[in-house]
Structures are given as structure tokens and as C-alpha cells.
Length: 21
Picture 1 (cartoon, rainbow, N blue to C red):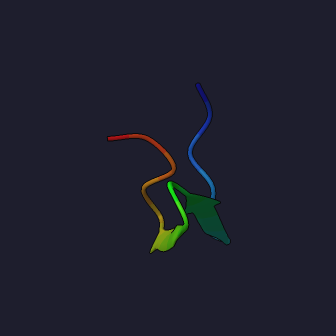
Picture 2: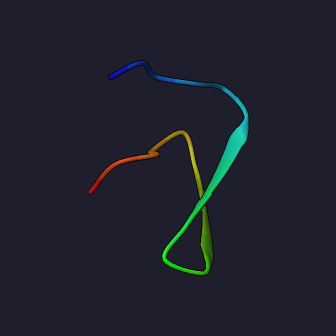
């Protein structure tokens, strides 16, 4: 569980800064 400043693609949607729901 690490936060990232890079866009994280999940569920087919790019969610920048928030890799988890």
C-alpha cells in the first residue's frame, strides 16, 4: 500500500494519485 505520484491504472480507469479505492 504505497502512494504514488504517477497515474495508476485500475479497473480500466486511470486514477492519478489514488491507486486504491
